[in-house]
Length: 441
Ligand SMILES: [Zn+2]
Ligand SMILES: [Zn+2]
Image 1 (cartoon, protein in one colour):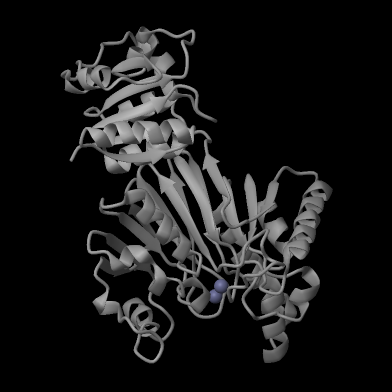
Image 2 (cartoon, protein in one colour):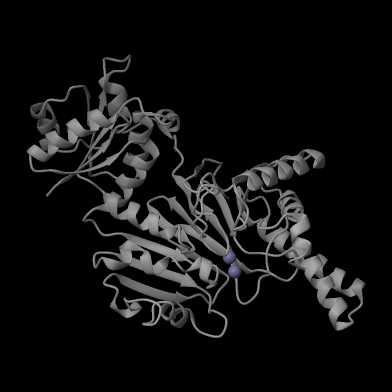
């Protein structure tokens, strides 16, 4: 059955179009947003794409250009609510096949769908430069922002109660960072989006503490034979990655065993600190956290994302251990300076930094050695690394929305006092960020 992608922000028009296509034996997939529509077009490669001209954030023409760059076979039809001041030539120039004013008549559509694809027009270098617009195609979405244990409830409704899970979509690739309880909702959403089509994704794990893997037994795509899930991570403390992931699904804890999951799941233990996922280069670094825990930096076409959900500052821990072991404080501090400067180097100029900010400075004093961040040290690390945007992450389960708001305000104040530039947000379940920076060289 041929597939049509409908990119249209008006739900009523979308429904009408879906009915029209269904009547003529087509399957439809839908997007209410241009950038998500580009993603869908590149992952699902439909035969036809119907795109509204006036979409929020990105215009239909920009969507059309971006899709046409990567996908030559699809028919792209731009539709508008009324006659706007553009002509068919503009649509053709953007790579579209035709331009219609709503409501669409099937006869007109069918004629375009049957027409052989016109060969690509030869553009002058000047025209081609003018058309070279790349709308952002890298999106980050937070599905779980909490550390330690899920804490749903009315006091955490603002930032969310699910544990660590972040989705990155870039150029059609789906990369999931950690599998805390937030991955459950993500799984439901992916199945809804893909329907009967196979999902291909990579799950990148920082470590196997329970708050980072506990959602995996409830990840719906793992229960469908059509899907392929590649799990990447380093060897866990005491046992290999595959053993640890299977252990949480053993009989006393869970009714379905890991090996009985119908999806194709490939576990790959990482050995190197630099590798690639599709077109994304990934650098990793082991962090200051009990056991084996990695942080990742993903280099996409539109900027880099650093993900360090669990990390403790070096100096206080080194000083505490030095006092215990009778090591001279100078030596412990000097060692911390070296370790920190390596981490700063790893994070240098990152566009988005998602960083463990579990504790306030005061609370951290009682939790030195627990493996988590303290607010003012988190801000100073981000400033020193010249990150563009910092997300406070791995919120403490005992912090309600009000407390996180307070910490965010404190962090912003620290940035102002430093006199430097850094945008700070507290990661919020359901929030999305688009990367649209200049390409990385
Ligand atoms: Zn954690
Ligand atoms: Zn941990």
